[in-house]
Image (cartoon, rainbow, N blue to C red; front, side, top):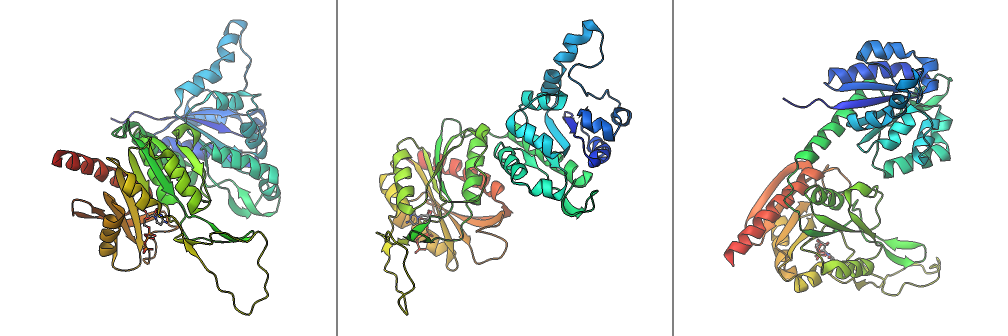
Length: 418
Ligand code: CTP
């Protein structure tokens, strides 16, 4: 019998506050227990009684409610109890004012003090006028909240109450409820996750490299870094210490709570240095980065001008980081990646031999919907033992976990063969 997840639903003061009643109902239909908290301005739009009738529970509104003197202490610390008893905090509608308060830790009412005392996952569903949404201050606050690991359910576009057409309308209650379900599911997965990488230090490279041609131009590739970041998340969930050396990507940095150590680099030479600096500590090394094979060794200090009829570039090879780690790996387990457009398995085997890897994750990047910028991948794991394991199309997170499953088996196989 699954344990009920308690959700604290914070309602902000906006026209969309009435939709929070539908959200409360949608959450309860999905089996969540819902405790509603309202800001003072939310009460201007919807009466607490609506939520109390829906949820069958008292709605929490003020820090120091109208209570008898002997109950004042209970009232004063109730936000701490709410923060402890609920597993997920959802705020809908999250107004521009609320986003600003949350981003900057201002706590002057029940909802904002509960937020500060709350340590679990937070889902925010903003709603406001389009110009307020687009304002640099709101966007900056959202960036802070995203970096904190909160889930933002983006507002829909449409005709707003003020007559403007654009983004700002609260997402549909079903969409917000679905996001809460996903957060609950990933929390459950995390709690039940295998902790089979405890004691390991995993060094992972991710993303592309950028090789400057002059001060304003560079050579790079289409790698998004998603596979490397998914590997880092998976290793951290399974209890490993993780060092993530990342080329320039647009992904959010891993949440601080994950403990993943992020080392941002730009060029292949910088990536090599970061890898070598941390190799000693690592017990598992995974090179998921798409490192440029060539660079301009000494790019000019000044911008190249459009003077010649034809421009030829002379490029030199970059250091092959994987091959160098292969030479120095000792008994570390080493995993390389091979992104190919043809002869997948042969190429993966060749790279495994020449770079002394224990496993090569091979993927055909010419297929639509997988590889590079997509959220899914379909790979073949080519092992030192000669085995090849096809892994069906799945999310990069699922593929990452599968890679660790096979690495652990491989380590046991290699140990018992010694
Ligand atoms: N790699 C690396 N350093 C480089 C080039 C590649 O560490 N300078 C690593 C990648 O991180 C990946 C693996 O080597 O794990 C294979 O990369 P790939 O570009 O497919 O292989 P190459 O050796 O460059 O071979 P080719 O270009 O001939 O396919």
